[in-house]
Length: 280
Image (cartoon, rainbow, N blue to C red; front, side, top):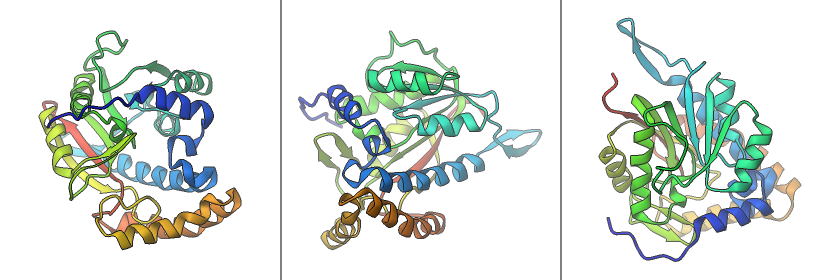
């Protein structure tokens, strides 16, 4: 895996974007507006609750539901704190890591029970105040595909593995393409094979992979121009005005909620559940 040369300043891009749009739209699909993104995040929350609720631990000779109360969780790319809130509702002690000063400042203000650190998960963490093997779980939702440098992408998994306890959970999302990697300025959609190699090389076992979206998010995992054009036309009204975005999201949400439960493969973003080897 060879890292392409790039002059893209990831941190500067996100500092500017979140300073101008500190909202679910700012950390989501900006062009589609705040209200449509709120429906998209409702889908993400549904999938998070279902998947995390289904995790099982070995105990007393049987597999028991994972208990998160009092557990230590790191949320990578914490952004506006959507998943910080989700983890805290489960009773976890949450540390949030974000690339930007603006996010760390807002997160610290909004979630006084949490700890928030500015760091780049794709860079060395020697100076970051996070102890090795100190977390029971790490989450990174819609984050790692924004690491455009391939070497830093691979390092991110090594860093996450180093922070997790043996047997700890790593739950993350990406586009997991079945066709060649696609690159734009601030995002790289890598292949399922490449992402799987990275997590396995870092010491993880892939436990599950499920759709996070089928209908409402961009169908990155298709080469069909017709499918991509149809999706673009379907969501285009959301960009016209916030009330239209709300109505379109409300219309699509029940269909999306059913589809992500019914299907095993998705043309869009999927969630992967991994476990660090050595703890079971």
